Length: 335
Picture 1: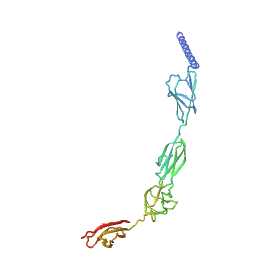
Picture 2: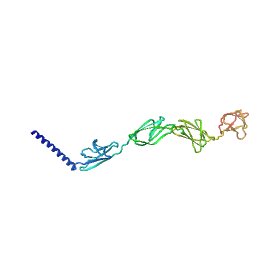
Picture 3: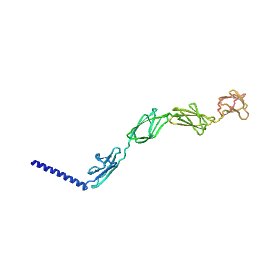
């Protein structure tokens, strides 16, 4: 009986101490020895981590012990929203209460778009990014409206500027391109108009005053464009064509300059009266005054001989060019 009595009084002592402790704690909080934070968020229900320790969901009451190093962080986490981190830089004044509020922004939602094509090996661009060969799966595509371009040489391009996608539902699509039989790859203009145009030696039409000459279809690669019109020099231009990109060519024709086709040779000698021969043909005698002028001499190579009785012949080669005048003065030596 004595042992049971001691146990009973021991239990009474323990419960009494606990009650005193609780009363002391309640007195501390109620007497303003500690401050508190009301932690909330929009939307509510966010998980709250303080110093990386989980404390519950918003809204909640947090009573710090003011022993943590500053600054410390309060982090908010909720599915479908970006994380938000706030910093506490100082102790809260005992007996006060502050609100900590976080506005959570929706996290971007992503999906994927798988694109194939007919014919094969088409190229595609999503929102103007780099071209990729099809088939291709575009990943990490944000929810919303996008622009898709599919193209291939020799086919009409496919352009969808209102391609709508939603997260949680991957998009699969097949793009069928139509052959472009009417595509014009070469646009030719000229100065002056009415210039004949040949491409790779084949006549393709004549330029007009205000309407460019449209030529196509042409194979991809290099081509020779030749323009010709009476009174002008021929104009030759090398161009590269692609069926998905028009090439513009302007032929600026250059007029043919009318130059004399004949030349003139003027000859004077001492003594006068000397005979003049070109390539063995006699052309006359040097007059007593002035020059013997030989006009309309075709450009060529000539052997000129100036001879006079009692004198040694003067012999030289001359090369009159188109429109050129050659003047020769010579004194014959007595033989």
